[in-house]
Image (cartoon, rainbow, N blue to C red; front, top):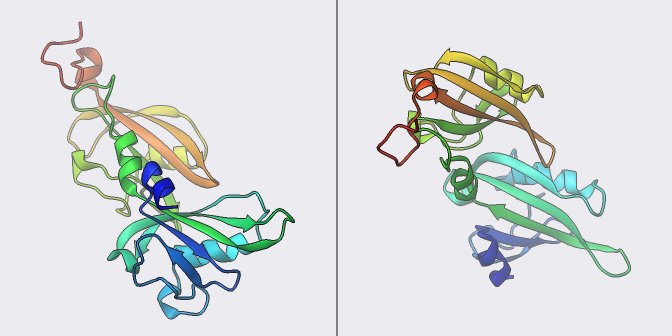
Length: 212
């Protein structure tokens, strides 16, 4: 299991009993042998809610607990995947929980291949009725969990695709392209923002000469 987690870049991997006890953890942090259902440290956590949902899920369903501060990770924004584990007789004997890092998402979203120098992309989603970043956005010093607003965000989360023109947080007049993302049932969206000056006269990130 340690090799699998390392190869996939997972922060941690738990095996959880049907009663909610964490019986195995790769990192062997302080949550090991605690009970997700009974111990108060898990109250109001995304992991507990995902565990409850997984108990009632279909056997082959993978559930996602969206990013939230997690006390056992020093309050850092943490997300989980969880699925039932069954034997050959299709009897459920526990749950597999994967703690996956924000770094992997940031690496993909912040890859600027093919984009202009001051362009950037980010993910956003809705948590408890509030729209927040689901990836870090270093161009404007924003992190996962920070509040975000805009017509592109609202439309993308509602399932629309398109583009708008706006003055961005970076101070540029931009074109913002937005699309919805269905990530294991989470209603996220992606927005890519390109300064209009670089649309008209683009310079690819990392290059010193204009594209044309």
